[in-house]
Length: 314
Image (cartoon, rainbow, N blue to C red; front, side, top):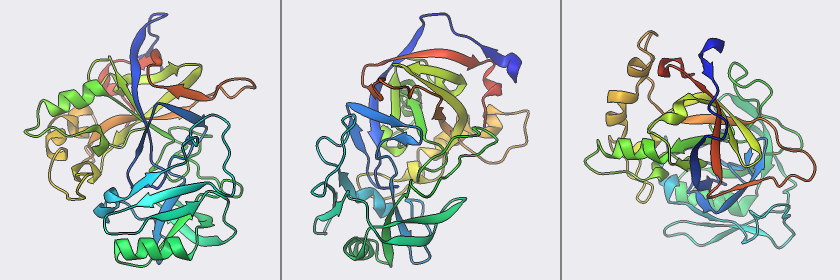
């Protein structure tokens, strides 16, 4: 694998940041940002909250597609660097047919034990009865809203790909990057184009070739180095219309024809996976005095990439 690494020419700009997104409540609607504050576990406020069922298991659109209808609004200055909430700061949650829910950003005192999401099991902060009743009513089954307790819990990512890195309630890794070129290439094959919201990235990059991000092992955005660790294996969520909560067959069926492991990794035994986007971790850049944000328009430099495409980590 080491022999596959090839540095890009010095000063080469692979593209620019076109859009930035956070999803404060896992599997609910995202928020488009002009700038995003970085933390080692992802953008600030990204997947800090999780809806859990009566057994403490995290709910996602895979099982509850109507979560796509839940809109989340953060305070106006929440995404500014060094902003801290006070007792009057709230996350505002809306959904069709529901009253507005206000969730205080002050740290809740109640602990919810037995919370699980994918491979992780631990405790979280319980946002209380009002939030529980709201989500229970909307989803139609007993639910609670919990917040990741970063003071007492950690959630390591897969050490086979990114040892020493951690996430909150994202699926597996702190950041997901997709290029506009990849979305455009997919949409050229679809009868009805799909928006980028189907794929729920954090960083959308424009200006590069379709699927160029597959090969990026190290990129630089502003002063920050990101490592590409693994292609993103897609589930059924991209088939769910994020405006209606209704699922379908596309774009997964079309992606299967040219983005499956069988096509991308013909030398390996197929596992039935479909890939779109690159999972990333933040390498460094947290020294004193460094502005810990990236913004739309920032250049993306490729410092290391794989060759040939069949070497892409899956």
